[in-house]
Each structure stands twice: as C-alpha cells, then as structure tokens.
Length: 76
Image 1 (cartoon, rainbow, N blue to C red):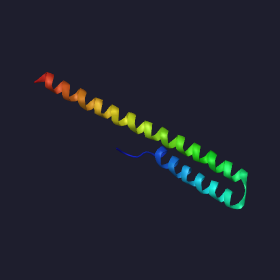
Image 2: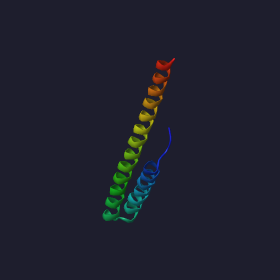
Image 3: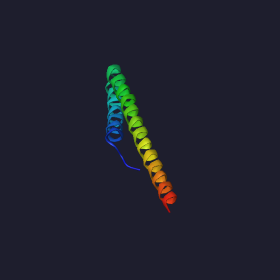
C-alpha cells in the first residue's frame, strides 16, 4: 500500500497541532490550546481522507487485475 500527499500532510498537521496544544498548556494560553486541537482535528481528517483515497486506489487496482485475469481465461 502506498502513501499519498494527504496522508503525509495530515499526519504532519496532526503532530504540529499536538505540539501547539502542549505549548499552549505550558504557557497557559487557552487560545493556543484550542488552535492546536483544531489543527489536530484538521490533520486527522486530511490523513483519513488520504487513507480512504489510497484504499479506493488499491481496491480499483485489484478489481482491474481480476477483470483482466477473467478476460484472459475466457480467450483461452
């Protein structure tokens, strides 16, 4: 299974959001904590979208392989 841009960027945003949340807690900034949480949710959503895209890609690839194999057996 491959990795796509949305998976990578989403996980990076998720990690950066966690850092931002922890930094906000450390300095007592509720606004930074909330921004960090929001970035985590956005990153997780983007990563999940990337995961779904990759799953669809793999499913289509397998379906095409099966279709091609079936076509070859019919010709024989």
